[in-house]
Image 1: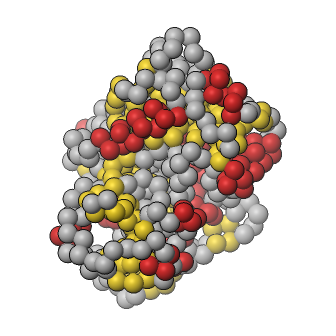
Image 2: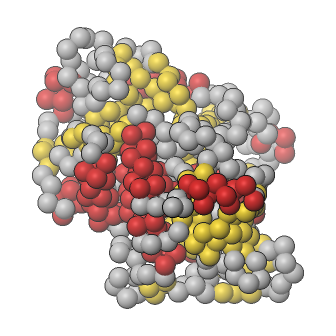
Image 3: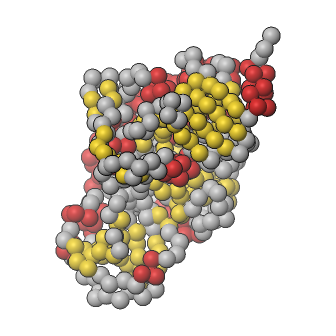
Length: 516
């Protein structure tokens, strides 16, 4: 009897693999997509460029937080609920403990009442309870220093996903469904031939398939650019830090603090991974890619987090153990930190919103303006010009939430890239020209907990089925017309449309420009 393994070995020996669908990237998103495809009867091959498992991407690690409190687009509420159900189903099928119940404390300040209302609504809408808690109680029990003006509640739906175990379980279920997985298979090129067949090419050979699903994580920007799709993505190198508990026996809790430093988020996981230590980190990192593991000095992130722990979590010793680094792929918006400009040749910036300035395509204004954090677009301020030497923009970048702080002596100026997108959501779509190529990227900070649903929606895109959820807010169309599609094939400038039907029978149009 011929087996799947035998067929795969025979094809690999010839240098050409064939299947219905090839999935590029065996992280949590790609693995979930492959599982749904295999169970839908699609002959599927799952590729990864490194030996599986590995720590080169975004999916590795011991834990990820899952919750129902939604701090993003409202379309995520039903997606998060469905994903929670699917993770529990995967846990039952794998017969392993993949999810541990762990209520998460959500913290905001009183000026963020609308955000709090949205989070509470998203939890209650899915039938979960909300436990309000006074900051004084939090401080006494968990040895924290939460401001008395904070608003706080426990999301009882939350839990901790055992990340590495989850991916292994999904991949095992995928193989059990007849799927084929090939690791150590890097991809150099993805193309669609004139007859419509998709070809994935690498040093080890070719994969020929009817459709391609791209889930390349931090490699998404380069891979999609080769297909002519330019998306505003940034890859951040993020240190994963663990902090010793100062007082033995102190209870710990998972929390997300969005209010202590508005525009910046800190999160912690209850004591579990390492006895006597709490995983706590800043939601941000330094510019750097996974192909350069020594690129990106994260010391600035470390110092910022140490200051936060010292001031707001005194129950922890502010000297962390950095276990490893993870790579976030984020939408290029308000995720910036500090870099230095050597020769700031300009009049001093005044504390006035009308004194916004431009710097080689960037917008600048004083960072000490209290209402600055409420701004979402450089169009909201009047622009003036600022003379900066071209060489001043050379050097490493460090990204935080709310713009780029450029320091000159004791003066801090905030820079917001004018190419920033109007949101910080992920991208889930099909290629506008090659209909048999679908992709998901920019999911860092959200992706792991919703991976089963994203994988299912990718599967449905491949099979031409309508989405089960409203995925319109996550389409690549929202970046048009600034991100343009370029093709190596000479073609006149063209406008095209890609209709996608949602379960509410709504159509969206993906309009962009093709350039030769």
